[in-house]
Length: 106
Image (cartoon, rainbow, N blue to C red; front, side, top):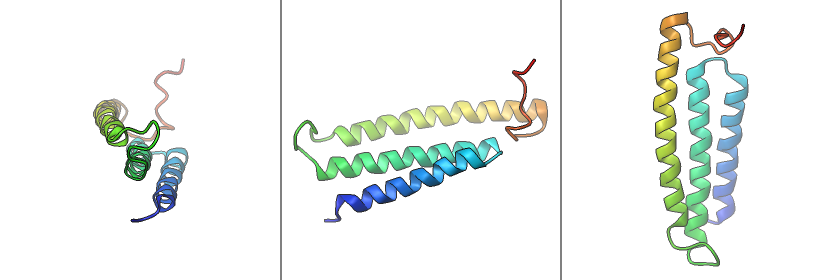
């Protein structure tokens, strides 16, 4: 069995890459992809912890898997809404650059 620390390091690396993508990118589509990468890093951590700590303490058998499925569901809903907003902004503004989107400014 693979030690838990390897999964945690993988999850941390994916989360940092996603965080860099959110902070450094200008395209709204790439920012959404980076957010999805961060959510998948959390899912890897949850499922690895659930498989290694199964039945120990307050971790019941499928807690990690249930939370991961909930995160996947929320991520799908967020992605659908975000893509709809991005498409609408592209139709009205002609760009998906977040620096150019100043619709809420006076």
